[in-house]
Length: 145
Image 1 (cartoon, rainbow, N blue to C red):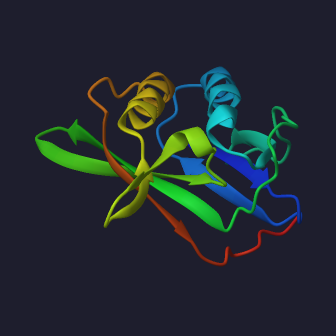
Image 2 (spheres, rainbow, N blue to C red):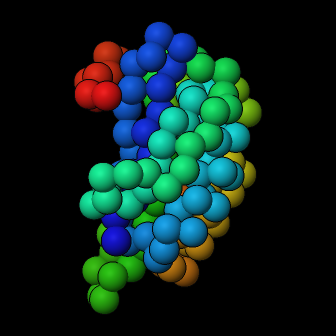
């Protein structure tokens, strides 16, 4: 099952995060409530991809620009193959990032590992682990309302 989380910034630009392999709608709700603390964007809706109505809404966040994102990379094994999963964190909270001289901003290892733990619960992939994460800013494709 696929999940989607829709976020907006104070300018009402919207973006979405999709996550493959979620185990249930309730797990997505739990993940979304926890994920809210990693982003300053407003989570406006979340649900599985297929339904036309969304399971719930959250109205939290400082509404920073969603054009600023942290990208977290996670690794897991599927059969005998090693695979990777990317997760965007629109408008990342300041606690998620740290500055590394000569390299720029990256995701704090402990924050990435905490998100990995949340994703393990959400997807049922017990071997999923945080690898690395970086920060960047670029225009976001605006999603329709």
